[in-house]
Structures are given as C-alpha cells and as structure tokens.
Length: 452
View 1 (tube, rainbow, N blue to C red):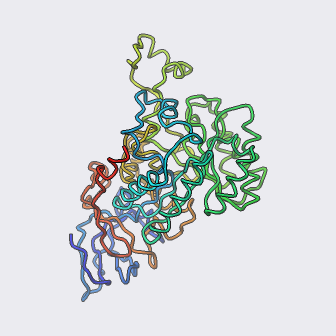
View 2 (cartoon, rainbow, N blue to C red):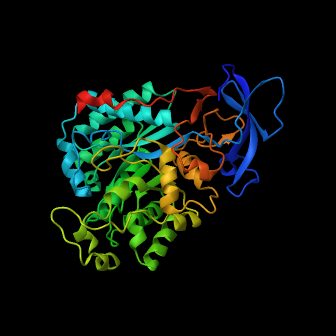
C-alpha cells in the first residue's frame, strides 16, 4: 500500500465500522461494517461515500476491503511510571508489591530528565501505534508533583501537533484534606489538568470525596478517580462518588477507572450503583490488561471469596503461589453500557511494577478486551470503547470518528473483518495523520538503557 504524496486522493473499498462513522449508516456485514470510499483533501476527510462512487481523475488507493479506524484515544495511562520494570521489578505481582517496588511518591527521587525521557518513550509508542489522544495520571505527592507536571507540560508543547495530551493528579484522596492538597489543586489549574486521586476504602472516604468535589467546583476542574481496584465487595467508592456528584449537581465530566469490585457485589448493590451512576456525568474506564496482571495473586485476600476459596483447599504456599487465578478484575462493562453509561478500555501501566507488559497499543487493548469481556457476537459498537467514547470523555469531538470535515487521522489495516483484525497484532498497519502516512517504527528499548 502506497499513500500518494499529493494532498488529494481517495481511499477506496474501505471496510469501516458504522459505529465510527459520523453520521452512522446501516451496516452491510454482521460485524457492523460498511464498504466505503473516503476522499481526503488537504489533510481532511472531504467525502465518505458508498464504495464504487469515487470520482475519477484523482489518485486512488484500493484498500481491498481492509478495515479503517479513526485514530485511537487512550483515556488512562501512567506515563511517569512507565518503562521502569528493569530497575524496579515487582517479583510478587501484587498491588502492594508494586507500591513497595516503586516507593512512596512523596519520597521518590526521580529527576526531571529521567521522567521526561520515559514519558516521551511512551508517547512515541502511542503515536506509532495510531493514538491521537492520551490522558496520563501523574503521581503528585510532595515535590514529585512539580517535576511530573513540568515534564508533562514540556512534552505537551513539543507534541501538540501530533497528540492531544491531558494530565490528572494522582494522590490518595486523604491528601485533599490537607493544606498540601489545596496547593496541588492550584497546581492542577496552572497546568490545565484534571483533578484526581485514588479512592481507597477507609472510614473517612465520604469526607475525602466531598472535599475533592468542592475543590473541583471552586476551580472549574473535571474529575478522574481510581476506584474499587479491589476484590472486596464492600469497596463501593463508585457508588459514593455517584451520590456525591448528584448531591453537588456537578456539571463537569467525571471518569472512574477500574471499578473492579462491582463485579463481586450482590445484585441489589450493583443495581443501586448503576442507577446512581447513570444519573451523573460519570464515564467508566476498565483496564483489563493491568487488572488481569494484578488481581487474584494474594491467596489470603482471595479466601474472602467463598467460590474461590473452595478451589484452593489443596493449594500450598512455599513463598510462591501454586494456584491458578480465578477472579480477573474486569468490571461489569456490559451492564453499565446497557444502562447508558459511557464505558471505555485503556492501557493503564506499561512495563512498570503494576504491569510488567504493555506497549501503549490501543489495538492490543481492544483485542484483549474483546477476548476477556466478550466484545463480540455481535460486535455492535464496542469499537467505540477505544475511539469515540474516550474522546468524548476527554472533550475531543474531532477525535475517534470518521466524518466529513474531520481530520484524516486514520489507521489502515489489511484485515478485512473483525475476526482477522483481532487474530493478529496488525504490525503492518498504516497510520495517517492529516492525510499523511507517518513513520510507525517503534522506539528501541536501548534508548532507556542508561536510565535502568
């Protein structure tokens, strides 16, 4: 496949998911695809027409029914911690083991150059794989907040013509009850960021959530929480946040990530939580790859789950687990979506103590999420979980969809159907930005060797 050097050409015989077309049309396949021709002129999409209607006299690239996506939107990453596995591994694979490996953020001594280079490495991967928008959480305890946000601001300026970048403060919610929390909220305003934090189960959780909403309202900030990343059914921060949002009549956008314990709660509690969430501006982002890695490694915690405990009666520990994990930590995406709540999936951590793997590839996230959470038979509009829906939650109306007048930011695959798309890594994909093919060569890990 060769993209013309000219600013005006057609992509013909493109299989496009109708859920990603704006406006949508009727599908032609059981996968929800339609065969279309796309006119690209001066970096924008000029026309999207049924296949076979391309205007002659203009350069044509025949995609031979290859699938075309808009560029991806990655709603939840941790660029500042990324690519530290070689110097800070997590041998146990536990959540607590990750905290121990990386150390407390307020005591972490990571210089600016180190953070900047690893964050940039992650952005290079995201860009090459076809993302056009990335939101990262930044550890924000103590002096690390200034360093992380400064590194982010430098990268946001340097990458502003290639990626939409957003940053979220990351502290435990009790931090917002302190004078330092007030200063951090002002720093988030200074860097045009999003107010966020981790909602750990604790006796003061309601007061902590209330304070975060007050700070966000006073400063006109959106909110993004880590919630209920736990096998404890009593962990119910999602419900508490939804009720607080209702009470405040909060007008900003709220994103809640993980929400793992929802899948372990009794039906009455699930119904109450979903009912509360659907009356708010909350969107949910699940992180299947990272949660598969972290969850259900701790046998003692898992013994709280009776259906798991019985299967482990014969397991013996000699400092290493001898059992196979049962609970995999994915939230109730189907039930949330059916209730009209925006649901998405994202990368989360890449090659750090919270997740030893990952390459900032949203197609990998979609492929594995489809297998893990059954985004198939039928596929319907699940492709929006890595494109249009996260873009909407990020406030980016021109990202994650294909339509006339939108930027020609597209990912072209040789795969013709979802069964083909999701069976291989699609390493031969082509990425167009403003109608021009970009270099999709991934950065080499050796770039970071001196930091490890």
